[in-house]
Image (tube, rainbow, N blue to C red; front, top):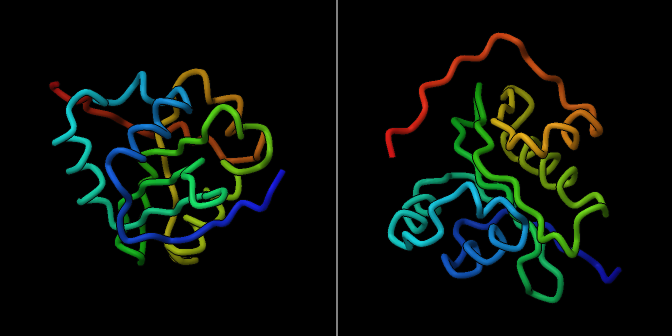
Length: 135
């Protein structure tokens, strides 16, 4: 596989973001048809880490963090054609590195991705609570 370049980017294009979500399978769980909402999701994230191959977005981590205590990893998406090569694991590592050693990193997993997080050794807490979105 050609070299994958990882970088923290202040923002990414909404079209490429939607496309990588669609190609990863995560798009089934996101409001892809609502471009305005998708743009707000990007604009209000303060930690975006990308994986690119020849400038093409093949993976993304979109997070919200205070860089001091907590980092919520809201999206982790890797194009299906590139899954199984360590890109997701590396995106998490880069997100954690940028958030800093004082920050915990937490996420909500899609049901079919729980095995992935267990495989990479991510701890699974039993003390989380959740209010689901209204729409």
